[in-house]
Length: 273
Image: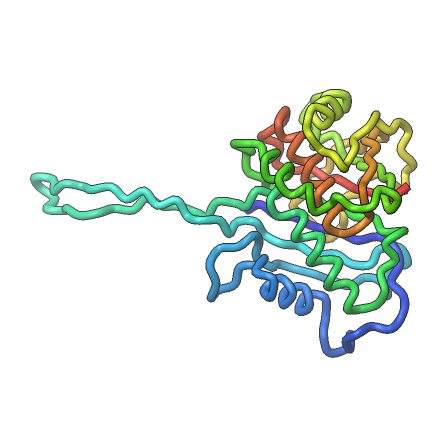
């Protein structure tokens, strides 16, 4: 089943607004997702994701704040019942429903909300220093992308029409899996052919520093490791916020899946520079 594993790297400081001895990241993230209508529960209709795991790591890792894992197999179940006429000897007639499973949410549709929910939850445990924040999303068992989602990404850009002086520059790095054998230049060309203003995707970033490159997290056993690339994409954002970060990650993944729609596993990391 399709899985997204999201990590936050940076610093967590200050006093928490909740007692971390009584509440953990799993419960806080889960409640935030349910409050906003982003997550599916046993009593709700299908939403964007289902909660799987989460852990705060700021106390044990000086660089990584925490991680969360969600399942995307929560979409509407396609039911195609068919009428079966009685066979001469069997005496069986009626409706038969074939075995079905839920469709997976498009990761492009889920990422902006997922990043925002993750950030909101981490902020309950202290002050997250956004200027030094890095985020990595590792995707496993992705279903083949049947259609691209640029219309959704285009339609929400007006939210980011803010003061351009508050903008930020970042590098988006990824592994070889994301490209599916294609060149970085093809990904950049696809991004630049789209209407992305006020975001601007620029030339490829060569010789990406090792600390900005993707790293396979130990906690996700589903991911098939691929060669890590030292090439990425430069992007200018109108603001450095969780929703803007989520939008960029979703846009890069969507553009890559145009050329490589059947890639099941990939990792993408975004770092402010």
